Amino acid sequence: MGGLLTDSNHPGHCFYMTMLQSAPISGDITIAIGANLPRESGETAAGTCLWAVDRLACLPGLSMVAVSRWYESAPVPPSDQPPYVNGVVRLSGQADPAWLLARLHEIEAAAGRRRTVANAARPLDLDIITMGDLVRASPDPVVPHPRATGRAFVLLPLRDVMPDWRDPVTGRGIDAFLPGIAGQDIAPMAAGAD
Image (cartoon, rainbow, N blue to C red):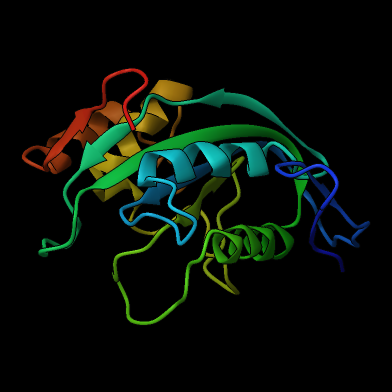
């Protein structure tokens, strides 16, 4: 296995060591990005989300296809946390689910995320939403993400990058799930907002 390496001579650039992957999944991969705390280095939540897009673009074997608009949403479940910045990226290529999850955790850690309690405020949250038509209940990661179809902050940006997406579990398209997210507090952010 391998991991994310940084190049001290070229800040902001990344590369990966060669890693072994078992049973790679091919096709479109969607990853939700969210943040509602600034990083220790001072970047805003929106800036960290853009930074995460750059890190995801460095993942070996995958290429960036699309990045959604950015949205501001209230925390789910409701709390007194600051609002989140949310988006979804669409990647194409091959990846083993466990390998991909480990890479996402490395990127989160590099952004300063410390896993404490469930649903805590965080400088970065990366979740695998779908990996092609893969359906798996265990081991982690569960794919598709078990709560994705009930969350506006996933469905609306997912619709931006894959309007024809169908849930591999139910076969239903995005529009079928929209009534279930009515009333969730979410709005597109102005272009360039951070």
